[in-house]
Image (cartoon, rainbow, N blue to C red; front, side, top):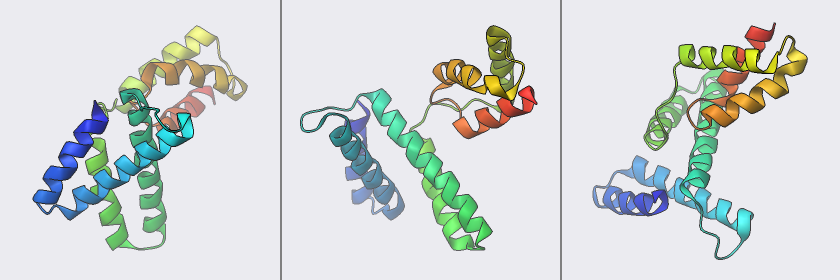
Length: 149
């Protein structure tokens, strides 16, 4: 289970004095604990799928932070967030490339008979079920909008 893996890796990173990885793992463990409390209170044990959701949320926050720091001309913070994001991505499934996403988008458009941006919700519902955890939702949404425009 991923939660136990995080605990073990946290111990190892602390022994190795890897400050960055220790920080990221603590953030993940905290995020998982918070998720468990929100989901079911005391006694709820997050599944690996729940934990992947937490990791994806953290990765998205890091990507957003990187953009904000770039816009604010804060390269030292961009570098820190980028390194943390790289650690987070080690725990996510291999991400699909843009070509693979485009193929799935086209299949979903055919499947739903979508013709305009008004149909985006139907298309996204089908797509996200197929690619959950394997692609960034923002990128998928952007590609769907491009295809429907």
